[in-house]
Length: 271
Ligand SMILES: [Zn+2]
Image 1 (cartoon, rainbow, N blue to C red):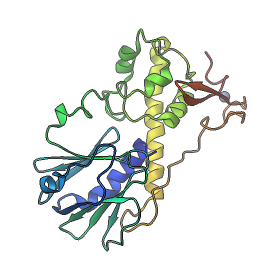
Image 2 (cartoon, helix red, strand yellow; image 1 turned 90 degrees about the vertical axis):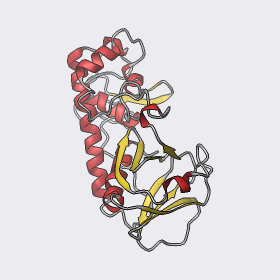
Image 3 (cartoon, rainbow, N blue to C red; image 1 turned 90 degrees about the horizontal axis):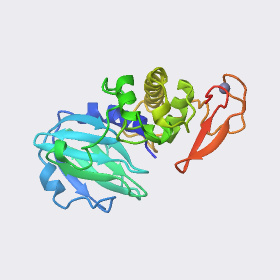
Image 4 (cartoon, helix red, strand yellow; image 1 turned 30 degrees about the vertical axis):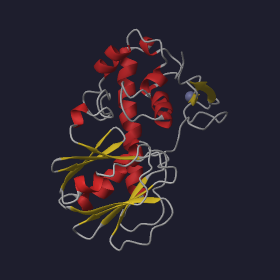
């Protein structure tokens, strides 16, 4: 599933080729995504200029003059740029042809993605009530401290909740908690302020490493074949059950928290 680093890498790869250009043609081959792609979408976006490509949580926001084209990659979605548009492959659902000859093609085998027209971002149900971005100064130790006091839910579940902070998926939550020395099952309300401060830094560090790695594995977004790989960090705990901790050699333990696989070092992440 594309996580925040993959979405951010897509944004960085796509933006330089599309910003400043107008949408000449918007073609829906199969609009049965998570929500049906509105039939009116081509009429709404054709002729409009892409002024910026931004990201909020895992949503790509193509800011056009007069509204925003919101794109979510769902579980298996990807965007590719083509100068010479190849024949459609199975699961190529949408083509966005620009006035510079570049086509942005949306591919999504499982069709859990989304493509919607948003006029008022501040009132759109998908975008309101999202927590801060992990790289935004609003995501701070003070904020996290205030947000978590009195909470009995585990710190891991809290970290993965979009109301606390957006874009921290299961792998990144596991890795961040290890780096911050916090056991994943600890009730969020009982994590000390200094630990939360470490956690904020760890989240940023882990995501930034994944984004850097993603950028390096995906040098050219244009006419590249295949899908963007998953940007695997050298995981310290994730998927390492029974293997020695990279810091203290204690075997990594696996548990389930909120139905998700969780990994921790019993020694580095003491209670
Ligand atoms: Zn350890």
